[in-house]
Length: 220
Image 1: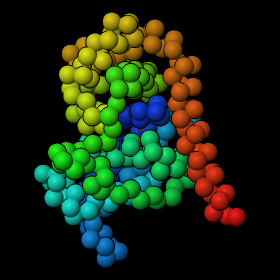
Image 2: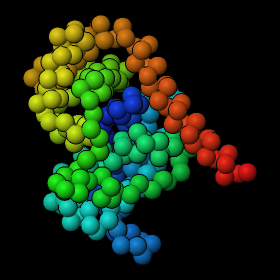
Image 3: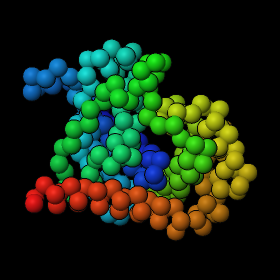
């Protein structure tokens, strides 16, 4: 039985992305020994840019997960995709071109065998959570966003307590209004639209420039 899930997150560099995943994983048809999950990432703006992705998970990594079912694998897949955007490995285009993403042991801490995508500072976390509430709660019209969850904790390398502390800080600064486990943007946050969108524009431009340079070198 197939299932399509859609979620929206912000990378540590400030790029908001809607991630659509088509479950379940299936075995590679190319003869290689890995499992595959297809999906698509879109930037949350008016650019119309997207990245079709094919997430490949090795047998070693497969054994590190309780299962490849959505409930166990979705946070890891989402964070691997965000990390590849952070590393400027994925290219956003106007039309689809399937790009492989290897979910390998490079995303793991060899000593603890835990997932390790980033070691975000408190300031990094504040900016990312602030921006997520802006993009999801305001620009996408959802009204609010959940910002203290396991997916964000795994991505940032932070505890849920650190995420909650960041949420409290944003609320004290008057940028969000928290109701149980969701945060809504305040007028003060919406007034920061130019700053937040400029952060996104800068990160996306740097990513696109990196790929443009690589294409230019390839065609020399």
